[in-house]
Image (cartoon, rainbow, N blue to C red; front, side, top):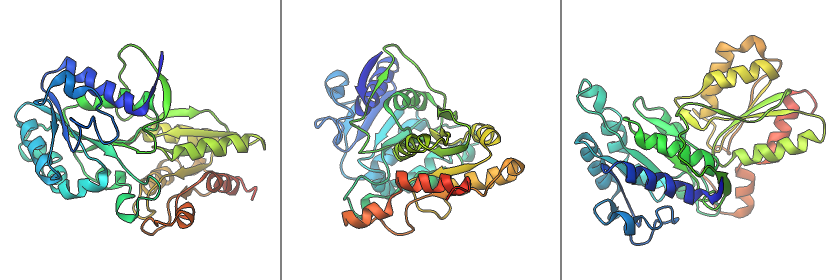
Length: 326
C-alpha cells in the first residue's frame, strides 16, 4: 500500500489506463501545459504527448462535441471540466448526443466517454460556481454518475469508468484533491453501481456520497460517545444506484437519514426516500429524514455559507430525531 492524494489517485488511474489502451486520450482546459487546473494530470503531457493530452480553448460545447464524435469513431476520450458548473455550456452534447446515441442508432454506435471534474461548493466561490449536478445528470437514461468520497474509491472507480462502453459522469471536489489515503500498489477496479458500508452500525443508517460524507463521519464519532451506533453507507455511484445496499442497512437499523450537498427539490435523497418507502416501509420505525443545502443559490458570505451547507450538527440532530431522543 502507498499513501497518495486524491489528485494523484485520479492521475494514476488515467495514466495507467492510457498506457494500457492507446485509444484513450485526455482533453480539457489547462490539462496539458499547466498539468491540470488542480494538478490532476501532472506529468501526463510529458509521457503521452500533445496528441493524447490536449489543451482546449474555453469552449465546453465545442470540445464535448469533439469527444462525442471521436468516441463514436472508436476512441475513448476523457473530458475534464474545470468545474461541472462549466459543463452547462456543453450539456446539450452530453444529454442529447452522448447519452442517447446508442439508443437512437439502434445499438450501432456506443459512446465511451468519461466527463470528469469537480462538482458542488468549494468555499467562497459564489452562486454560479457552487452547484451540485449529480441529480441533474442522474436524471438522464444512458448516463452513469459516479461521486467518490476518497482517493481509494476514486482510483478504482475512475479506471472502471474509463473502461465502460457508455458515457460516465465522474464528479470530484476541489476540496478533496489534497485528501490522502492508502491505495494498493497494484491494479484494482471498483465496479460501478456498488455502494460501500464505510462504518458498521446498529441504530441508524446514514446514506451519503462525495465530500459531504465527512460530516457524517464526524457526527457518528460524536453520537458514539452517547451510545448511538450509526451505520454509514457511501453510495459511490448515484446512477445506477445500489438500492439493495440501502434497503439491507435499513432493515437492520430501522431508521434512515440521508445527507447530500444539493438542493432539496428532486434531489438524490428524494429518489432514495421514495424507494425506501416503496420497498422497505414496514421496516421503518421513524420517518426518513434528509439533510440538504438550503433551497437557495450558494451565498458568497462565509457566515451565510456556513448556514447554507450541511454540517455534522445537522446530522446529529436528524439522527436524534429519528431515534426520538431530541
